[in-house]
Each structure stands twice: as C-alpha cells, then as structure tokens.
Image (cartoon, rainbow, N blue to C red; front, side, top):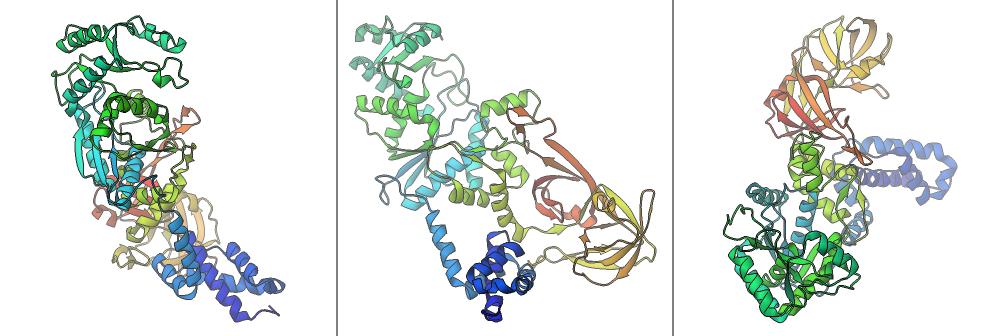
Length: 575
C-alpha cells in the first residue's frame, strides 16, 4: 500500500464487496473481492495483508445488508457498475423477430390437451407472451385437439390454469376441433385439385412405400374416384383402418415428412367436446396448417423438433392459396434428470415410479407449483437463459433455484426446524421467553420462543460436539458442552452475544412438534430412474409453524426453503 492511498483501497474493497454480493444472492466472498481490488490497484499487492484486512471489513459489513440496500448502496458509490449491469440486462432482452413490426404480430399457444402442462409448455407460453408484449401483438390460445383418442376434458383446464398462473394472457381462444367443416372443405378442394388422395393400404404397406419412395396403387386414380371414397369415409361406410387421406408430396424428398403423409383418418372414438359427431379427423399437420392461416398467425415460435414439418405445412397452405407464417425455432427445454415428455411421465405414473402429475420430482407445472417455484422466477429464467436457437441445451436446476431464491427470499419468513433432533439439557436453566424476528431484514414481525432447561439441536451438529466445545444457540445464548450422555448433551448456558468464529446453530424448545420434510432429488441418473430420488427428513419445528397456511413458503434456517404441503408435512424447494 506504499504507493496506494489506504482510503482508496477501502473504497475499492467496499465497491467490489457490494458488487460481489449483488451478483451472488446477497452474500460477498473475500477471495474474489481481494482479486478485484488488486486488479484495480496493482500497487496494493505489496501489502496484501492490509488489502485482505480491508476486504474482510467490507465483506462483513456488506453481508449484514439486505438485497435492496446492497443495490441502492452500489448505485450510489459505483453507478458505473450498475450501468454495466443494466447494459447486460438489455442484452438479455428478446431478440427481434424477422419481419416483425409493432401492432402487426400474431402469435399462438397451441397445446395438445393430452396430458398436464409441464415447464416446457410454461416457458413456451412465456416466450410467446413476452413477444406479444414486445410488439403490442395478438396471442391465440388454440387447443390442438383433433386426436380424440388422446385428448381429455380435464387437460384443457390444466393449460388455462397453468398459463394464467405463469402470468400469460391471451387475446382469444379456440379449439382446432371447432373447425371440422372447414377442414373438410379444404380437403375436398385439394382432392379435386389432385393434391390429396384416398389410400386403403395398410400401415405396414404405407411405411414400406414411404421408406422406399414407392407410389401407392391408389395415388394415380382420378379425382372422382377419390371423392367417392372420401364421401364414404364421411358417411361412416369406411371403418377405422380401412382408408386414410394422404398428401400427394415428393416421394423422393430427403425430408420424409413430404413422402405422402396421412392428413385425415377415421377415428372411432368419442371426442371430449364433440362426442360422436365426427369420425374423420385431420392429423396435426393439416389442422395446424389451416389454423395458422385462419388465425392470421404471422410468426410461429416453437421448439426445433417440429422443424422438419415446416415444409409440409407450408406446401399445404400454398396449394390452398393461404399465407405462410415466419418460423422461429429453438431447442426443447430440458432439465437435468427430469423428463418433460408427457408420454414418459404417464409411463412413470403407471409403473408406480412417481406418485402423480404433481410429484415434486417432475417438471410439470403442477409439481413446480407444489414445490414452491414462482411465476416470477419462470419468467426471469426465460428472459435470462432461454436462447432462441435450435442448438440443444440441457439446463441445470441450480439456475432456476438461484432465480427463485432471489424472488422468494425477501418475502419468506424464517423458522427453526431441527432435523434428527438431539436433546441438550442446560445445567443452569434460563426460563425466559425470547422474541425472534421472522425475517432478518423485512418488517414481518416476530415470534416468541419459551425456554426451559431443555432445547433440541440438529443431530449432525450434536454428533460433532465434545466436552469443552462452545456454540451459539441463535438469538438465545452461547453454551459450553459439559458432557455427552445417552440421548443427548449436557451443557452450560454462558449468556453473551455472537462471537467471531463461534458456530451458530438453530434450535427448538421442548414445546415443539414433529414435522416431516419431503426432499425431491434428481429423478433420473442417466437413463435409469433413481429409486432413492425421494427422501423424507423428520425433525422438530417450533410451535409457530402451526400458524403457517398450507401452500405457503418458509425458510427453515440452515436447512432450506420449503412449502407447507399439509399439516405436519413440507416439501423442500431448494437450498
């Protein structure tokens, strides 16, 4: 420090401690701050011990601040750093859509109501909604429900409720199944033009023909023959499996989606909304091609597994003289160890591996809500991490944990929960009532804890204590361990306040009640479900917990954020 003003080093230490805390969930670390100070003042390296001392002092003070105070103070003493943060935030804004202009963007959310909504649908909904907001556009909620065997009435509401929970607002709603007569009209137009044909080949024959690029014997029949077969399909004379309507595409195309795919088929199964009124149903590609044109969709934002179908849907519209949208495709949303496929989730439920669509190990919206994730966190995750590129990306749950923690921390009360409790008998009882704040910085009030001659501490802490050791019972007293006895510890209350280097642990008084916390882990390790992915931690919790409403979040100190699932049961959200 011989060549650097000590006051400058202190100011630098404070600035970088604030920035480090701002970047890391409100807690600064000494090491990274020291590096920043030395980089800013290279001459201070000669007196590194004094730099470390200045940084420790700054970090200790900064870590007493709440997040709002950290941001405010940083803005005051180092506005240039906050300006840089704002610049980075701007860079994370949604990129422009090709050919888009304000007030002239029409988008759609097209869920298939064949299962409960998962996080991939939520993120997709948020992306579309954010673009609707960006351009002052129009957003459809449009149910792709033209496969009667797969759709169920309950799933429609699952999506409506899920999107509303996410904060997604749509301007109009419809079902693809509402336009069956329109599909029939367009089909007849294409049959007359030779763009479609009726085929009675078996599924095996069609698969072989498409693989080999071979024509079906029905393909070259004239339009009147196909119209007669079509009328028989509509009248019910053709049963399921006896005939389909195929697209006359390019049998040599490298894109197999163009090799005469099926666009209509007979489905002898009641529809949850239409009943038995229709038996000839369009496939996904035909219904979507028509609906995107009818709804005036300008931009289709969807995951990249649909990319090979773009050309087919465009050709259907082109033959009908309908307008094609612009496609913006991005990778599927995948989280480590968590299947999002509805088919896979259904299998896991049927096999008894998970306990339903809201099992906290799953990536469904029902599971995320039950576990304590917030709509604000999902929205911020999309804005911060989701890239509109087709490159595959596997997201870490830690990213969502960090964002959700930032959202819930300022408004989540703290309580004491003691896992695997061990008794501590105090030789000098301190029969007092202590008032403990519900939050270290927010004005949430306090709760009272009554103390006698016995408290309980976590087993993991008790196992490490030996006679002569000292620890602090948070908000209460320092204690010295006198002896270890069967079933617990004998200690002496010393009074006093916090001391540097003295471990601080949570505790509960004797008048506490039992609690179980369900802890979800990674459901899959590689390709195999982990049978140990759901565990339960039992312990004692302070009496105030009984007043916490079901569905509310708390932070059990030194344990993690949890949500009350039922009386006496919580679900672990994340650290």
